[in-house]
Length: 143
Image (tube, rainbow, N blue to C red; front, side, top):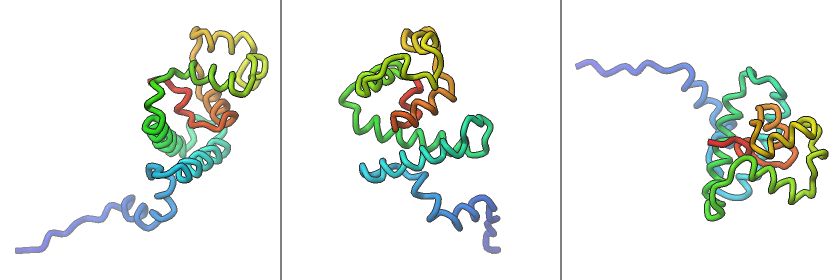
């Protein structure tokens, strides 16, 4: 009987070769320190990607955001589920901000429409809010 020959998948071989560099940003945070490090790396990735919604690393941003969101859901699930608008209102209150303080997101009218549920946050706004408040972009994405 001939031994089975397993064809090597080039992508898997490359991933294995570089795994020690990739693992920290693709692994579920097991501690607050891991979580903080992942959030910091996500902030750096947001800076690197900028407003380019077609950037090759946008998938990595999604995966990292999901890992952070899952950690936050597990850690804070006792607080109940909130919407992106609830989160924004809470963060504005905690930072003592008014609608006019969020000019990088849009005009006061746009902010008002967002806070009243008449308008959805777009990707650019989500990135800016996540960076400003040092939270995962998933904070501002409703399921």
